[in-house]
Each structure stands twice: as structure tokens, then as C-alpha cells.
Length: 54
Image 1 (tube, helix red, strand yellow):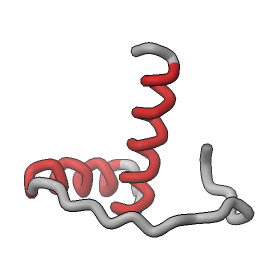
Image 2 (cartoon, one colour; image 1 turned 135 degrees about the vertical axis):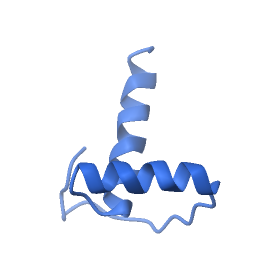
Image 3 (cartoon, one colour; image 1 turned 90 degrees about the vertical axis):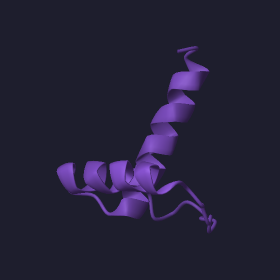
Image 4 (cartoon, one colour; image 1 turned 90 degrees about the horizontal axis):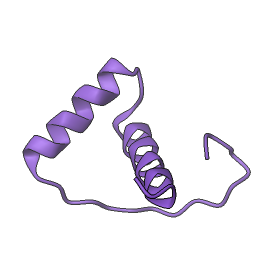
């Protein structure tokens, strides 16, 4: 995980409810990330938590 420019990338388009987008946007501003970076980070964290059985 993390930012590694060597990794291949795919484009993903998401359609989310406005309140979820607002929460992600607010999180991005608090953590000084772009919305795209925040989405990727949160998805990575969710997958890691799932793998750990949380």
C-alpha cells in the first residue's frame, strides 16, 4: 500500500450518495489529501481491516 509510482493503475468510477461524498471530501480536507487519494486510502484501510478479520 501507499504511493508507489511503479505500480500499475486502473481507473475506477464510483457513484456514491451525496452525504458519503461530503464525508469523504471533509476527510480529504482534514488530512490534506485529494478526494481521489482519500478514497484510495480509505479503501486500502477497509481491505486491510477485512483481512485482519475486523
